[in-house]
Length: 443
Image 1 (cartoon, one colour):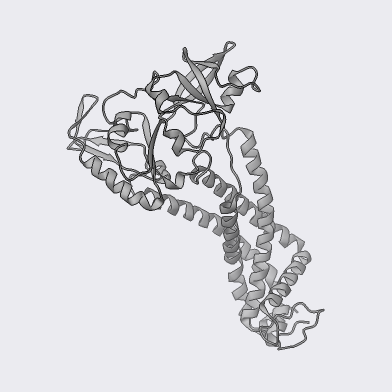
Image 2 (cartoon, helix red, strand yellow):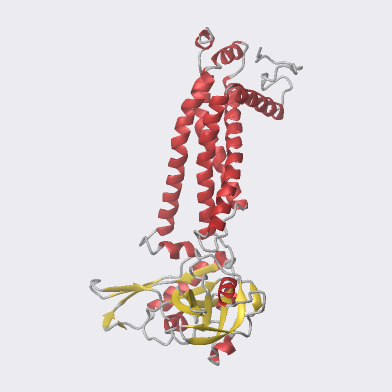
């Protein structure tokens, strides 16, 4: 049935012939292995169903998780320049005995005095974290997330203006009561959403502002840029004139290239070291000032970890994914061993005719990778449906999860790793099965 001897003319009726010599090339071997894998899958539908179910479920979870992490951390609208950005989002103040401390966002004064003066960055913008306000339309209250920004904020971000334009430095200096709103707020506030909103007024917390621009809204998972309405930092309630180093602002530092990160951080650390001490905040004196220019991920994780935040994060995520793949892979190893045991006689015959162990290992590994990629294709379809549901369900406001190239490439890598984890062990085990024992199992 199956031969392992060299042959210059393999029979077209026996696709089981995969020797390394005799004129058979690696593409021929791969083609034969895939044909055998397909026939094996059709021969054992129950094992096939169990295997595909486990693979597709595992890979679907990993694909959706990867898509969410990409959505959360990678450069996306309106932060396409995030790979060139550093953030200064918090400052920690402590006394000499480190018994009293104060930690929080930085103030406008801190950014204007110590960050805007940096020479290495290309640009430095600023914005506040989420603020909240109310607006009313026909007696109905609209809860708003507000942001106060400078003019450079619109230059370091990539907002798509559907109408109008952003406010500039001159508008801010003149103290005009203007605002940029999102397309979502326009639909909620103005009766005719098809009519231009630019030039109209909007009342927020009993203060009237003139709309000068409408932007496509950013997902709420991007806290440095997401909001419903954007004001110049000079309008009321921005608290930009408050003294001290602590406040409600974050600095957005745009580097010319990521290679400048080290120089920017070093320059900023030098500026911080020259801040006069003690620092007076809330009636207390602090002599230790701790802050840093960080990447987006470092800035985000600094809220949860004190040091080595990025390394801890990737270690935890990597360990979770490895364990998540390993558990079903172990179950599939047992399924694969049972499936291969039914083919012990085939293995014995091939070994009796001289098929080397590496040929048998190659066959079983290809079979397992083949079924893994079938499960991956199913998982890709399921992930697309789940991601579409997340984007349209409103669970995450304005979510834009996608299966882009990075997510797809990672998914392919996961398929390969998963296929190897669940296929190599049984392949080696069966390839080393003695001929006599393998033939005996047939009877």
